[in-house]
Image 1 (cartoon, rainbow, N blue to C red):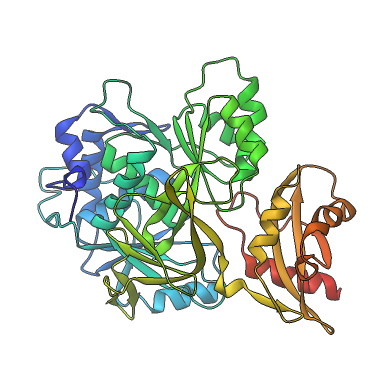
Image 2: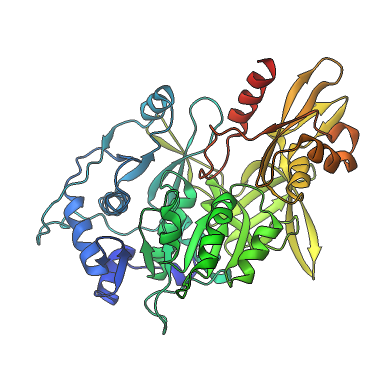
Length: 461
């Protein structure tokens, strides 16, 4: 059943352009009101041809990407933001799988009265977005969502993590668009903005620019390493700070980090989600406990007898895009996630604990090793900001765990080994390697496959 809180009767940006035409929609170096945004979207809409899929280049300017996405949806197209960091072979395989498509190009079209004449009617169940899964090898799948899934995702999250828009009595909240639009977490920010009628902050936010960007927003989605690096600068600022909520993801979250942020009045949130579930499924305030919180509204999470998590509910994807067609998921059967989990009771509320991925499990001396359990243990050591455990071949045991660790303290394999001495023998890493510089800190989720390949090459060399 659809909640009336996200039952728009027209495209959301057109709704807000009527309801609050002069309110700021996008704050950037060239801010846009909702009325101005609608005009740009209408003008961009007329630039598309008859191909059903529009492909956008992830390297294009972020504000242009947002406008083009809205325009393509308003034209009745499905969109794919193609990550230009993917290899040429993977990009070719992805594009070959789309069927007829067109590349989008930002145009400085002049709005006129005819621009939106061929606008597609608003339909909450129409397929809109194609988002690539983070497949470790080969061509990733394109997951299909419609407005219903994205709005249900946004509505459920906002019920627990407040984000207010133009209808609120106070100044509207502003969410920093700090995550790429080829990732479902980036799209989730856009749809929270559209649902609430808040403000979208689009500023340079790579590296040293992130601090300045965070000073201008109330909400941000970050990876823990980013928060760790900006906290000292935010703490030293004499000016009042608007930043009130940070949604963390992509890696284990050190308790000391969130305690420091909370002491500054910045609420830290974390949870669990998948591409197929339109981002966040469970959510909680980051509290150092090893659960990921309770399911949000409009999600249905169940655990099979073998421990695998099954997803259903209004945020579940329509299906996968294959050879130019939508291959639908069975909504009643749900999605088998390959994630292992269990329920635990916490203050009379059932919260989800993620045990790990079925795909990541390996055997060491006849024992099943779940690398996520070792990573969580390493994260409890002060100074460790990120950890990844991968298997390496061992003649005696078949495989043994190897830990790749990023630390704010001087790297010390001895200290790490002493910390892991309390683990079961088969869980203790055989080797500890310092996190390679080639793995970018700002990415949403480190590639386990890439790190495993790097570790194997390092050990052989």
